[in-house]
Length: 269
Image 1: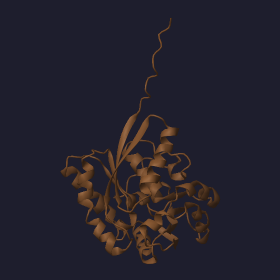
Image 2: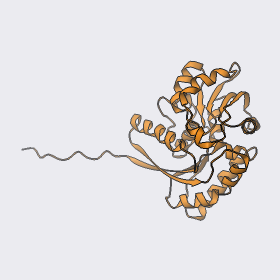
Image 3: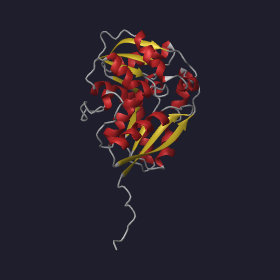
Image 4: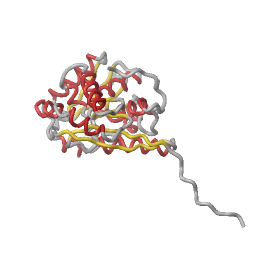
C-alpha cells in the first residue's frame, strides 16, 4: 500500500511592506495590495504583507498638509518596530506642496527615523516614484488628472516641471475633502481624460494622487488613449518592487508594470 502524505505547503518568500499614509486615506491600502495580489497570482513565489502607520489629515489644504508632515518621524518610528523590507510614504501632494525635490528630504527624514530604531528598510515616496515612473517610460511630456483644488494642482505641475517633465495639460477635479476623494468613481476617469489635450503628451498620469481611485481604469484608458498610462499608485508599486529586487511586473496595470520598461532605471533623489 502506498503511503499518503499531505500536500507540501507552497514555498514562497514574504516581503513586508510598510506604508505611511494620511489618517483619512482609504485607497493606497486598497490599490497597492490589489496590484501586488495580482502579481502573486501571475508570478507565484513572492507574497506581500502590509503594515501601516498613519498621520492625521482630513482636508487637502496647505495648512493640514504641513501639520501632517510634522508627524513623519513619529509614524516612521512606529513602523520601524515591524521591521519592514521597504517603506513607502504615500501622500504625493503633501510632499510636492513643500517645493521642488522635497521628496528627497522626506525620504531622508524617514530613513533617519528608521535607522534610529534599528530598521534598515529602503524608503520610497509616491512623489519621487511618480517622477521615476514617468522617466522609466521614457516620457518627457505628460498630461495629468488630480482631485485637488487648482492651486495645489499648480504646485504638482511646478514640481514635475522642475524635475524636467513638461506638463502639457492638467485637469483639477477640485475635491478638498480627502474622504470624498476616496469615494470618486474610478470609471469616471474614462471620460475625464478626454477633457485633456493629450496631442503632445507621451504619457498620461490618470491619478496624481494615491487617494483618488484609478486602478480599474488604468488599462482601459491606456487602450483607449493609445498612450502609456500610470498613476501615483502604480508608480509606487513599481518602485517598491525595484527596491525589493523583484521584476516590476503586474498584469493589467498599464505599461509601467508591463515589463517593457527598464527595471534598472535609477530612482530620482
